[in-house]
Amino acid sequence: HQCSRVYTSAAATQLRPRSISNVHKPLHGPRLSLSITWPGGARPGNSSVHWLLPLAPLQAYPKYEAFLSRLVSALDPLLDAAPVDAAAWSQGSLLTRLRALRGLQPLLRAGLALGKQLPQYYQVLTAPITRILDLWFESEPLKATLATDAVIGAMASPHTPGSGYVLLHHVMGELEGRKGAWGYVAGGMGGVSQAIASAAAAHGAELFTEKPVARVLLGPRGEAQGVVLQDGTEVKSKLVLSNASAHVTFLQLVPQEQLPEGFLQHLAQFDTCSPVTKINVAVDRLPSFLAAPNAGDGRPLPHHQCSIHLNCEDTHLLHRAFQEASRGEPSTRPMIELCIPSALDPTLAPPGCHVVSLFTQYTPYALAGGRPWDEREQNAYADRVFDWVEAYAPGFKASVVGRDILTPPALEKIFGLPGGPSLPGICPPP
Ligand SMILES: Cc1cc2nc3c(=O)[nH]c(=O)nc-3n(C[C@H](O)[C@H](O)[C@H](O)COP(=O)(O)OP(=O)(O)OC[C@H]3O[C@@H](n4cnc5c(N)ncnc54)[C@H](O)[C@@H]3O)c2cc1C
Image 1 (tube, rainbow, N blue to C red):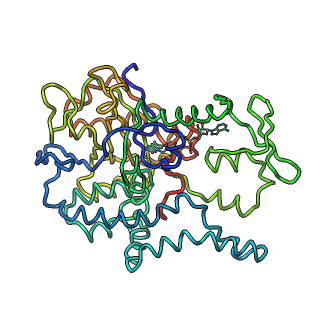
Image 2 (image 1 turned 180 degrees about the horizontal axis):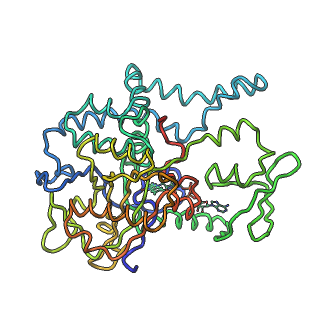
Image 3 (image 1 turned 45 degrees about the vertical axis):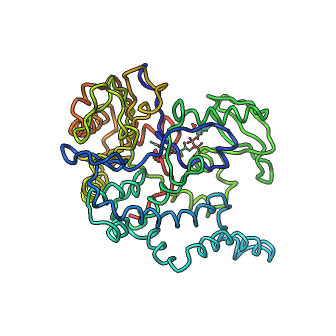
């Protein structure tokens, strides 16, 4: 539909600053911040971005943010460092072992930066997020809303140990020097790929699309020598870089006999389960929420520019939604994160129209009883999500002019993501 130009992703934060400076793509938009709304519940208080929550429960929030910021600052350099090669410590020559130990330096520096508070921070990474949030807040809607960042994209409940790390993952990004900021990419998220493509082209790269790789060509010593495309064309090269998922790269494209058995076993156990169904929606008017109705002129209000969390008034709701999906059933009251990128970027939709991105969970990859994720199941789930949005923003359903439903199997099929994950490998233990 002409109203929509949407992608799987909605907002950017986790591209490393170095990558962004390499492609010189301006990102724009204010910080996406916490915004909560519930049917008929709260009323506007003041003009802060948190204004849909009563102010009292937010008093501890700045301290909580400062606490997390310290952990983020300590761990952030690890994202640009080579991963620690634990296996190499016990194998190879003395030189190899010493080199491997050098790889520990960034980790040790992170530990030193956290100082005496290391045990509390260790708890953040390993405990269920509910335990951490209970230490800071009493307000259930606030705790549940913050907990959404600890489960989003992960088949995990806020009560799952390790969900704290998922939260950290979502506050770890930065944009244009602003730590923890999320922003919309001008022209839609596809702008990131376009910017990378034009930066590569400017350096002399030739780009080919719609050319699936069938396998990586290996030489007699297992060294990569190029790729064979699905149409049979051979492309020789000294180096092969793959950003297809690890499963696709190593379990489908590289001949198995060339890879160490332990590595393959490890990879086969790497969990890519995803609870996410992304629904991209084109609407012919801006949603008007009961908690903060639109002004008469139909122009976006501040909360339209935030991420809007629905069905998270209580942590138990999230847990129940997770439990249903664990039994192979899509949640009856799914967790919904709603963004309206066109509220900030008018190039995404014609005047008056908007694109609404619904990041929803929990939907199992495999439905109970071996039911297929056919059109009937997809539509039934999307209708349920729309019923919930309608409860918060009456008139939403009537405003919909098109929708695109991406269940985990659809994400797998369309985007080559085994399991359909948005955060591959970030699945706390069950
Ligand atoms: C539903 C969903 C929502 C998300 N929301 C956000 C968000 O709001 N913000 C955010 O920052 N991130 C979000 N993400 C995560 C983000 O999309 C990924 O982190 C990002 O796309 C990873 O980029 P990549 O280039 O590493 O891999 P990908 O984007 O997965 O690119 C890999 C490419 O390899 C191609 N490929 C696979 N197999 C082959 C083959 N055999 N031959 C040739 N090509 C092949 C695939 O088609 C794909 O184009 C979301 C992800 C999902 C699934």
